[in-house]
Image (cartoon, rainbow, N blue to C red):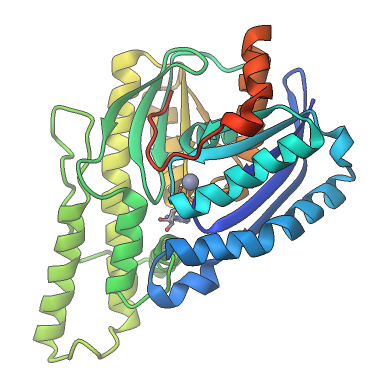
Length: 359
Ligand code: KG4
Ligand code: ZN
């Protein structure tokens, strides 16, 4: 089957055409129009600006996606769109666009949970997965450990009590005077620090590393960075406007990344052990982080060699519509004829939701 995926939950207008034959998935096109430049001056995504930009770009992005895939509307079997969670003005554009296409093209429509999409990005690599699986979900809005007992059966067994880890990367980057979004910047500077091969002197806390549960907390780590920078400025008589020396910024970026990844990995391994998981996934924008990928991979190989670790290509870590199309295809194929009938009515019934539970 051929699926058109649509994702507009945040600041990427993304459309993809994906083909699924049995367990074989081919990405025919994957177009992502990023709004990073538009939101950068504000240090974060402005919801109404994002919606206007989606509105401007969504038809040209659809045209490119169809053209690149060399497909016509008549070739599409299913439309899958992110229905939430996310920024409501942004979601509404994608959902209304998908409903309009579904109506005009007479194609069934499915609304997909954004995080389920991130999880299904991993199906690009391998489809005959063994359950139970553990997914570490790390994005700008979510930090969760999800137990997947079987296909579509999700249980959140650990999560952040305050900030999402991606949000912490972005806020720490801002404190260090780096550009938005901060995750990739922190990651780049941390890699530079590693190449210098000098041992780090800065030590940051690992919040909740030894707590008995599988939860996280990143706001204390963020505050620790704030005080570190404050003290550094005071000691060197730097004003709040003075730029921080590059060597200091690199070292803070490195140590922050080490701290965040240490806690994420320790809790994930605990969850895998406790639930005897056969498979581990990494999902969400922060899974683009090379240190997180490498550390988790090597820890699993070392401590849990029976567990398979699945990782999607980096370009499918951050928001994209391929992941939404894949999740839509798997959902559709699991449907009974009655459920398929319901999906055919989604051109009128589907609603965008800012907050929805995974499952
Ligand atoms: O999944 P995503 O694209 O959007 C949401 O659903 O939130 O995730 C975006 C988050 C941002 O916080 C961004 O800074 C972070 O993912 N991110 C990274 C990296 N690339 C993106 N964080 C750490 N290292 C990266 N290389
Ligand atoms: Zn996301």
